Amino acid sequence: MSPRKLASLTTAAEDVFMTFRNGLASLLRPEDSVLVLIDHQPYQLANVNSHEPQMVINNTAGLAKAAKAFGVPTILTTVIAERGGLLFPQITDVFPGQEVIDRTFINTWEDQKVVDAVKATGRKQLIIAGLWTEICVAMPTIQALGEGWDVTVITDASGAVSVEAHEVAIKRMIAAGANMMTWLALAAEWQRDWARTEQAAALTEVITQHAGGSGIAYLWEQQLLKTPVPSAAG
Figure 1 (cartoon, helix red, strand yellow):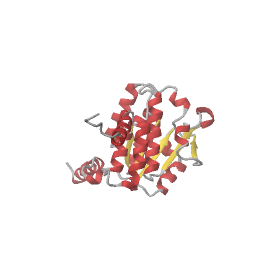
Figure 2: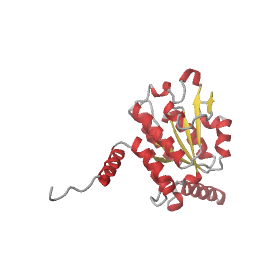
Figure 3: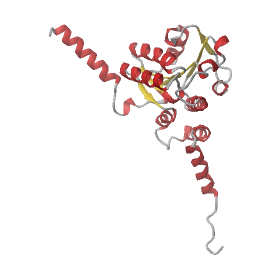
Figure 4: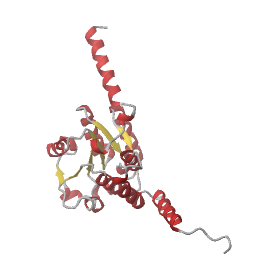
């Protein structure tokens, strides 16, 4: 093997190693994160069959609220909204008055306005969720990875036309170097320590509203803490 070929393979191996990092530094941090929510629109939702559609809405709303609680810049984008419909109000209500970037590009990362908005944040940990996983999530993820971004896809705030399409897209993105997470795992990673009380109250509110049984359990815990212990004599 020629020295040039060996050097090329070594560089490729180093690139893979850098993509699949381990250790504390590899965890997501709110101060380094930027979130892009892609095409959460009625047209796309109508053919989501990988997840319960209402659950996708719930999870995406939870993700959006968590991002806001932690001060994570969030880019909102649609594709041809006049035909595909407006972004879900459960998302836009979290960011009142914020511009939604409407595109003609299917691949969000080919839209310079979106890319410029992401770069303007100065953040390096790119987090993506959208509809559909196999198209509007996979394409920007793979392109951004090739440009050196650290990309994480939120799988349960995304959805595909079938379970197979969702799973194949995830495998494809993992092979390209992307990380996969769910919205609640991401929120917990941003929080990291309950001693960080500044965001804890806001996150608890998000969990109560969107984390299903975990939210109910928290409310029950609060009820128990406020309920006097029954008297033994009573």
